[in-house]
Image 1: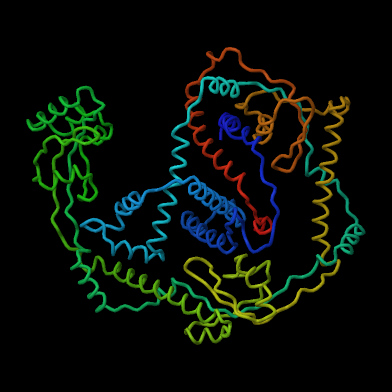
Image 2: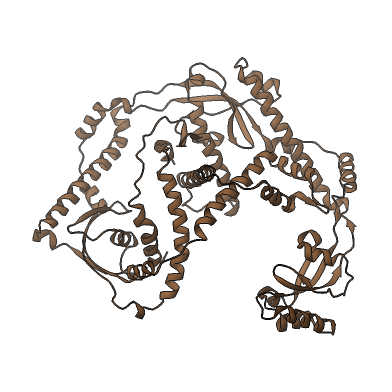
Length: 612
């Protein structure tokens, strides 16, 4: 991101946020990922979203995720997305926004996946949703939520203006010069200077002995229900494939609709005397002028000109009604009369027209098999959820009983702890659910534990190894790392505060070590992290302390700020103002979101979110 972009964002977003304040919330129990007002998002729900997001990423990167995509990073961006979605949905509803039922219906009716050659097909709609494990009510709720939150965004981003005063201030901000004096306290240098003795480590061990125990380990018996395995194991023979093909063929599913290759030009209402222009174009075409030449001579529509008067190949359902209504009555080579729409006048001609045909069985056999297996496997999966839930609710059945009743393989895990696992037990939320008193002490079966929307397990304790006290030698490396970090951070603060105070007192020894920067937000000769700090800080007397992204501390003061006097002579002002207006629209939307966020009661499980 260029530095002047950062400058605009600071002016339009960061600076106003200083006055908003942030909530100070306490961390509660560990069974949730985060809470928003009265709504709780569990660790299981977040892990399911993380799992699906990771699957999508692995597909995009062909299984080779870049190093930046750690579990912790994916978890963080997934939580941010869920948080934003929930908050905007709540705000939309609280502000009484309505996405009309007609709009929902229109969007559903225009979705190609729900249409056959006759248009929207209700049965196809339900069937397609069933295949992805969703019912119409949930899908319509998704469209509603998306619609009303988009209304909020449009209301903010489409009404943004910059006043002349704001434009002047923005130009000044981008081009003003800051004169900075600073020094840096290096984290690694301080860390290397720390010397810890064995006695220091031993004293900490004695005072905090209870914190240094081995993890509890357990082995579990479990059943694993995976919708994809059920789908894979569904049997289908050629006789059934033929029966399904005949049924779908009679229903018109395998009839290929007639397609049309169409020439087209548009004379828009923006053109001067567009009606006369359209009449002249139609006459010329009927007298033999090609559509490509007519497009260049008469059309003011960029797409028409670029395509040389060729619209493409379409079925009627893909075209606007005013075009499709004309095409259906036309012969190949025939030229239409003028067709009026909100855009202007259209002239069309049908170049080619395909014939109705039926797709052969061999071309759709694989699709029939896949759809049949997916539909029946999905139905079986949801039936199993209901049946197993009913049996498991009473806690009268062991995991072995459930395995036998439902003819499901009984599996056994290796030893796992709450902190680490293997295979399916790599999920934090799953291990958290397993290591609780009802399983480890009461020997009950677990509830249905969902790995994702398509898979769940039920588990029962097989063996349990209690945590043991670690010796000092076993704990020594952990204690050393902890104390080294704590001591380094404490010394960093102490040295930084002493340096700041000495600089503010004017001690010459400290001033001899100062570094200097003079420049604006476009300057390239300084670290971006430091520049963001310099240009986000107010100009006040005295030195201040800030922590850099790498852990170093910077002590700095803004000695002076100078603004350009003649703004008219600055190059690139118009481009910058256009960019600033666009940025303002998005920043005001983000400001609105941050305002909602800061006024909401949000509690994040930091301990859970910090795990990798």
